[in-house]
Image 1 (cartoon, rainbow, N blue to C red):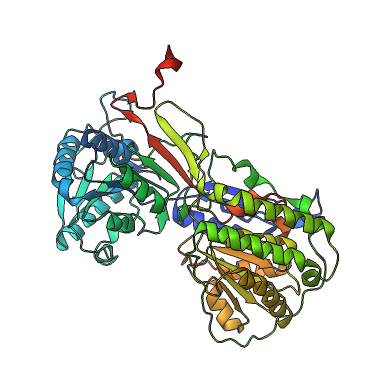
Image 2: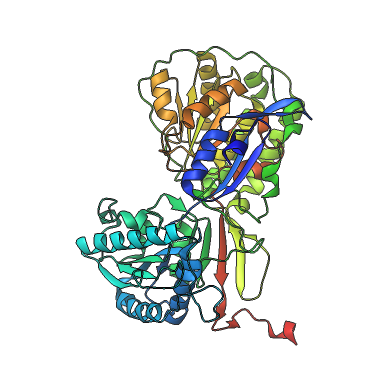
Length: 546
């Protein structure tokens, strides 16, 4: 594996496995360029990772308990919890917590743990003797930790003498919390740590807002779900849950190609979703746009020492989507009107592309963000992708006297999604150009708090670029600058809180492909909403089945 990651002829790596190995691959391969002999260009190596999860279910006060218990058992203990999508946390309304815990305890006590080829087995062995030993030790430590801080062990079957490499299931209950901040990493480290085995934490909550905050409180964002019979509760949760795959009133494992396209964000992976609409395009380098990149081979100004001692970080936009559509349309109008002044020349085809973007933003941006994108329809389930959740923080590192055209388009895409924009200029010429560009955004109605521009010292820049909140870095400069930034980011320290995306003009999307640009700044969530009740599809159309 290490040989392939480091090999000069490997142009892309797709990995499924642990967070640690996935980050190691990103840090090693992410710094390399590969020669594309067909187009005689060098391109950054592409890395796609699908890693771990600390997956959770929210169970509201009116959840149907039969389905909830069945869904928890399937999600937490199938394959002995050795699935990246496996359930490891249940967040349950305090009013029904005792009922749910008692039913789970009885069900887990009767769960048959045994050999894989025994037809009566409900929970199979783990992968190896080493994993069996590790999981028993981890379960013991998690039980002791909970007891030390007011929790209790509901049932622990991990010490049982079982055949082969079997490990029995374990359920641990943590106490009711007044605020999600009380679940500290010091007291409840196992609430955050991926164990990759049959260990389940149950945490009661008193308010649905707290439940969602707890759901989002880990460094992972892979799978999750809701059990509820309240449409209002479901809608509230789905609007705020940070998870790549979200399931309603069903188990949270078992994603299928094109039905529940699979993949997460934060430290669960890079995206895009395997088996989804945009997966194949992630293996494509959009080199057809290169002739339209303005002054692609021009000399880059030398770096200069900036004058700012700190960076006033921008914040994501809180304006309504309607207002954002209005202001982004105005900003595009101003840039189109002033295009020749910005780029010191006549670029008719580039202006035509900008006009296409303007038309899209005015007429289709809102539906792109709010309208569900249907996946394959199956009986008893509504399946779609959701584009409403955005990347929060975007950084542009500007070296060029005038930004590459693809950089300008990615900026419009990021602003359209409400991301916080932080531009760090590396020389005075870049600073003057970006100041002029930003004036068009501010004139259109954007807040200075959402679009920060800095010309800082190198020490401030180095500290800023490693900010764990930065999700996307757009490198507006030559490939040598990309390699320098990649080396600064991928330093093998593994301290980031999310898998960063690096964007360059040299492997950018086709300039007219607006949706691909926008998707760089979307945390895509695949929704799977069960419409069955005890085997009967609720949306059944009788006439279609006669």
